[in-house]
Amino acid sequence: MSLNKKNHNHQSAKATQHDPFAALRFRDYRLFTLGRLLLSVGSQMQTVAIGWELYERTNSALVLGGVGLAQVVPMIALTLIAGDVADRRSRKLTILLSVMLLTLCSLALAVLSYTRGSLFLIYSCLALIGIGRAFLKPASDAIMWQLIPVSAFTNAATWNSSSFQLASVAGPALGGLGIAVLGNATGVYVLAAIASLICFIFIAVIKEKKVERVTEPISLQALAAGAKFIWDNQLILAAITLDMFAVLLGGAVALLPVFAKDILKVGPVELGYLQAAPSIGAFIMAITLAYLPPLRKAGPALLWSVVGFGVVTIIFGLSRSFWLSLVMLTLSGALDSISVVIRHTLVQIRTPNQLRGRVAAINSVFISASNELGGFESGLAAALFGPVVSVVGGGIGTILVVIATATIWPGIAKLGSLQEYE
Image 1 (cartoon, rainbow, N blue to C red):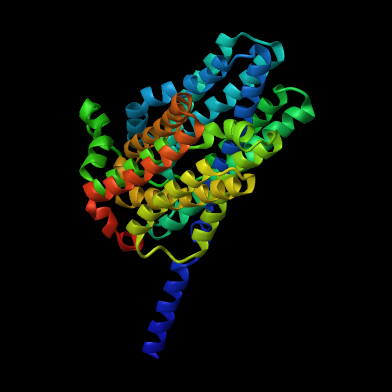
Image 2: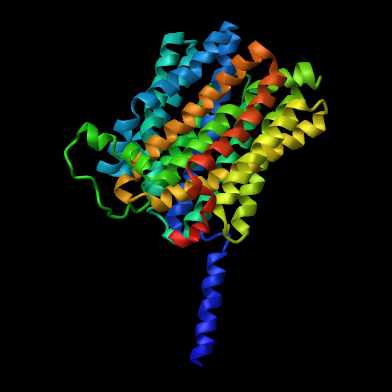
């Protein structure tokens, strides 16, 4: 009887371990994920509306370039402070205040759109959005892992990736549809504000658990503790560095309009398919990973997924077929999703709770910098050497980065199942 009970318990534990909905079975995590999904969709809708309205009003590519810059500069400038606040103060309160700021900014953009307010005021709103996101990101990343047990971290990472990719597909489409139906961007800003407000309500009803907070006096050493932790933990440093340089070198997305028009000879509808393909691939892979048992060899999976990302980037750069290019972009998103899930899980499992905010802040800067600089790098290389050389060279560079990472940090190739650390 005792043996049967043990076998039953073992089978139950195994079933729980492979439960694709493990993280979603926790009420607060469901509320948090749904709220963040709505916030992301609203943000993506708003981004489309801002770009469409500003270009319609000014017909200036420089003005469009300033949209991203106005938001990313405050995010980078406030990194250390925002991370420290996430570890020192109530993470739930920080999220609520940040979301409320984003809601007010969306309403302000709606007013400015309706009254055709000045570019200065619009950029001021964008800067405030950047400030809100600077504090929102580390606090959100830190509190998320308080809502579930450590055993559900890997599963949560896949659902986080899934919800982000779903927002990346649905948000722009809904934003464009909103402009088409309403005839202007004003209503889209209002919809984004409503999405933010619903997110605020969902977060407000979450029960924040009591956790150990930072009590040491504010100092440069305390502010930089997240960066020191990453530097001291070589596997985390290796994973973050690998991801950053892969995005920096292998990002072909910034050049998709050029490839669609000049190389693949297709129109705007096909361009929309190409732009959506990486997110669709990432979404499908994230859902697949949620259903599959945890990876037993996370290190090799991380390295090979980034190698694969480089290979499909090269094939995309050389392709003259729309359908082959579409498949390669879909695969690039799927392979990138594998590395994202492994990296997020590794970072969260190995980071002490009292450092989560500061580590998340540093991590978000790596991501933001690689995305922004990656687009700039691709554009510069395309201007100097042509788009094909830019993308193919980026893919080759990504593979070389994997080789360098495995050489500098040999421990990453030996990383086994992340469940061992849970």
